[in-house]
Image 1: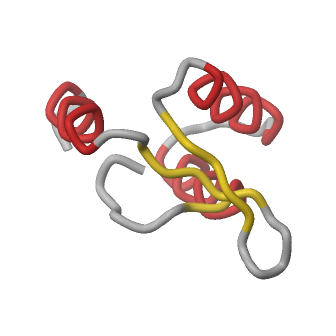
Image 2: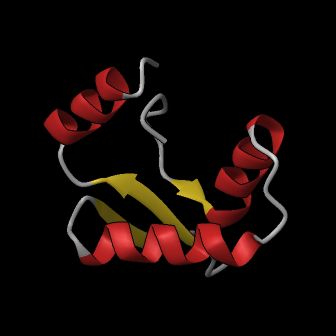
Image 3: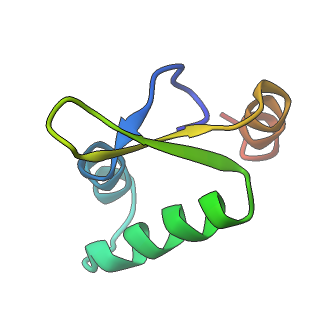
Length: 71
């Protein structure tokens, strides 16, 4: 999510995570995104199909996350 500028759905985030890590439980991603939103790192909204999407709340935090993860 730190490398994109448009909101990402849970399915989009899950696909990227699954392609880079050996993780099999999608619920971990759902909980992580929810926690990051509760901590105000992410904002969430709904797309035209009422699916939740997430985006970093502040560009500064997004840049920091990107740098901290070496992305």
